[in-house]
Image 1 (tube, rainbow, N blue to C red):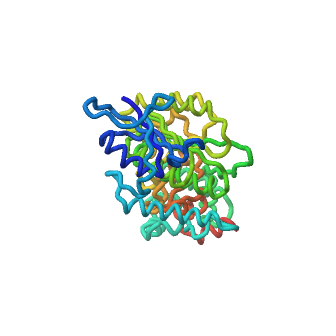
Image 2 (tube, helix red, strand yellow):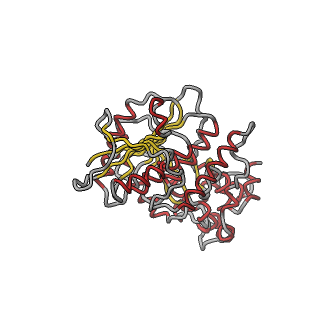
Image 3 (tube, rainbow, N blue to C red):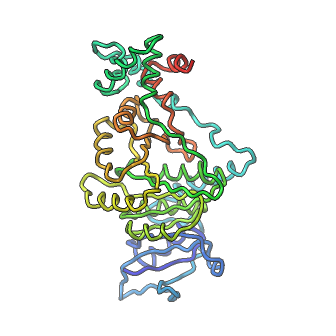
Length: 393
């Protein structure tokens, strides 16, 4: 396999030419801003891997590093790729343009217009919260109705009964005290913080990473770098490369975690470093062992295990147990807008003892990302905002 690097005005433009010259199997490897001395050829340096065809050798000139280089800056930025439609790219560009204009405004508040946790639960949540499962302990029955495991519900109800005051408020206070939560501290000038997003496939790791990049990086004038490491699908790497290019942040993709480890060791940049890892299924035990070894050598990385809020308690518990060798520092739940009740999510937090920092409440970037609100979600289970207000008092 060989590599060829294009200087381009955009990643879609580079993809358009690469797939015409190198074939439809050309794989995006990395994307980064072009060095100043060659920026006239294009603002981005985009590298592809391909299997050469002797009967139709690719055009280009040999670079100093042994790679082939070709400028493609004359292509339109909205050139299609054969995998993503023009309308999808236009929609993504519009979202990013809106973000940039909002961030540039003086006094911009990234939380403006963000919906609260409570607004993302359907009427089914209220119905569950009002339901009392047939339990000897009525307080435990209320928690079971909200989706908590019966054993966890009874344990919390028994402890709440020892507290003075109105039973409902005591139950809410006890439940909130059991939910591990950690706030995200803003980065200080000159500080470097590295976050990695791990988990099963299809849980929203890539979208969540972009939300964090915008909300806690670009919106706060913090430098951002994005890395992708491991055996991602080609489409996944292309999607992340597009996001990085549209956000204007450096992005590098590595086929192995070992290569990513070397890159991180040599990266002395400050700011927010975000790592996108491949989703691992239960059958990929060897890949999971490799991921555990990778993070074991880099203990300073904050590892966020991404799970779906609308999954069953048993499915969440299996995922937490499977990724335990990787040592996740935090749980991150996506899809709160599709969950009928937060019981399974809170039960997983309580049983695992792993705190939550962020929660994804939709697909909009970056608005549909919030810091985890234990009080709000506990109130959903215990009977709504009336009990939450009583507990706060």
